[in-house]
Image (cartoon, rainbow, N blue to C red; front, side, top):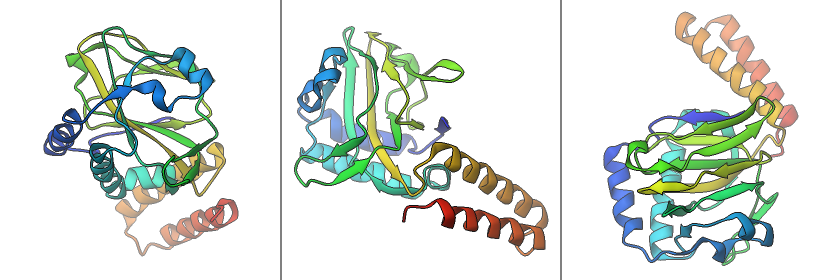
Length: 227
């Protein structure tokens, strides 16, 4: 399932976050790349353990915790500390697939990468190119979202970032280990949850069918959840 989550950060939140990361010391993005990624990747990143990355990452994590849509879609168990990248002057990231497990270098904190996420931090008309292209069974889907919007998609997907030919594409990116490993099962739970919310809005939370459907949701989650 690929899902756009709008307005994870509002304009004030974006401005505050950008003031932190724009003042940081950026480095070659391949400082954190594996061998295969290094062949395809040309960008800049904030160092994982820099003060700017840590402070900005906390802002992103707090925003994720406030988003019912993100929680319902991802069912997060663990989230890799958010990272930050910048593409400009023709930089891009060729087609690749994310590592199955990501380990934070300073703490050995590890995450099974069930989901990948990109939080756009620059308005789309401020740069040309930079589309995030995700390949699935329907073909390649190119996405370029407004600043503050998040794209969530299976980490098992082939994906790329098109070269940026004008301006700069700035984003946060991270991975999620879900309580539910299987993407199809997560999609069923997400669709069921949205249907329950719609029925509850029409009939009320105390309606017998809402209670019954809620029970089905939790029984499925109990069956499929790792933890």
